[in-house]
Length: 501
Image (tube, rainbow, N blue to C red; front, side):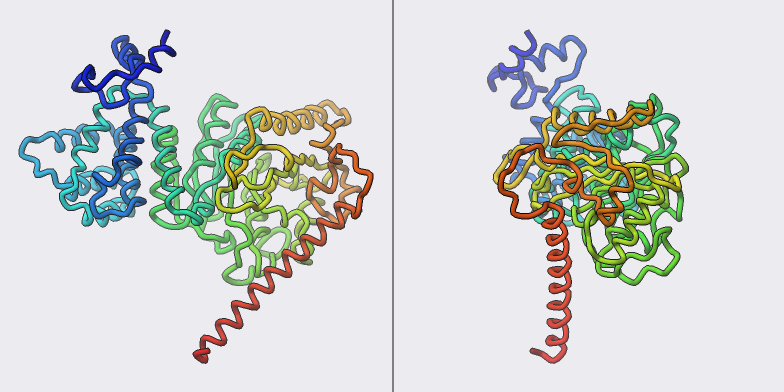
């Protein structure tokens, strides 16, 4: 019955004064029964952030307007007393309808929870609103009636998604793909018991930290502490609101950097669980001092093993981490990276490597892998390899997603392996998907950790032109040479610039 009513929109001439456009008869029935108007807030947010954006954003850029709108949704959900104050101000008959004034009130309302940086940001944005009718936005959001926290969280995700679309290629530095979030969060939470802390040292918009926090809380029945670090005051404020909308209201977020060896993150604290999608293949600002990390200094041109060693070093005894890495980290021929990779394997720090499909990110087709790490045990017996690179399907011309069933297959492979180990049984693996490999075989492959090296594809081929391992090694060498060529080009351009050429 409700499903049928949800498909019937109340006509404009039949809507009540408090009902926004798009209200269904299902929404009306839920409210009459004391429930929430499911979907009403989402419909209002869609109107405000898409079709009618130009009507309200004044002199703000579209992205800055979305920041203001997300802040309003956050206050409505998480700061009810402040929301009542803002709503009261917007309804005053003598209110001059100044968007600037109302957003200044909004800024002061969130300063205590989100910090001075977000308050300063909103105060700066208010200068560009002029006579924009922000009061109408407030009333429209409030007129959606009773809305639960889950719908507020959905509204926040929708606004962040639109923000991602607007920032274009920079979105790759801001968001983690949903498929990767689901895999990392569930893997790191599996078997959680007495987990007190979850940390993301490169928190982006908080999507990975909130998912991991929620998965751990669900697995063990109690909520852990959440913390993270990020680059830039604006992204940190967006992350704080996103986390709060998902129930992580007390997350401790601090400024961080694009490389962890700088030591700005969390004052060398340790954690039970770490999840992160750090920036890929970034150059270190300066050489890492010998002895700074457990397994040696990473090369200056690439911070991938700076991040991997950070995760291992910051784990408490019994702790586990899930780190998203570009595929090249698993088979790079760079001597420093190979040495670190070998030391991590021999020390028992690497538990599993899972290859995900290409094109998960909106802005790049790069292939990525999940490194499942643990507090070092001092010795390695075997490592699980899962090759999910052939899974997924295109949802657009450039982007691929994993279905829930495919994600479940990956997680089931990991759980079957851990169950076999606990029972002292040999893990059979699944053809074309998973295999447990003893450390002796990994040594023979010179510590290459790409699942493609160890998991047979299960597809017969009569004409094999080359061994996949050889092709992978060549690809790694070509990638490194390409990186060095770009560095050389940049150095030459700088020298030419000095002489005005």
